[in-house]
Image (cartoon, rainbow, N blue to C red; front, side, top):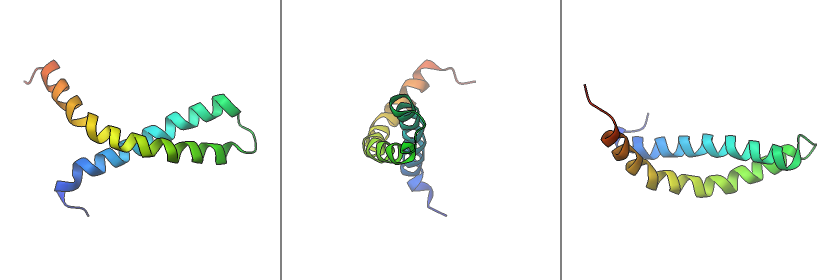
Length: 75
């Protein structure tokens, strides 16, 4: 198990990985269809997308948390 202090990093890693996997899969399917090279195109698109998604989530997640706190009511 990882120490709790790494939770934001792990959250960003998992979220960016899953979201970039989903978006790149849909984009690849729309661009190339489900042909014989689909998996290769998808994995290439996913890895390059994840390189940008991970730092983006690291930067945006704290801002998003603060915005959500301002837009919601604590009970």
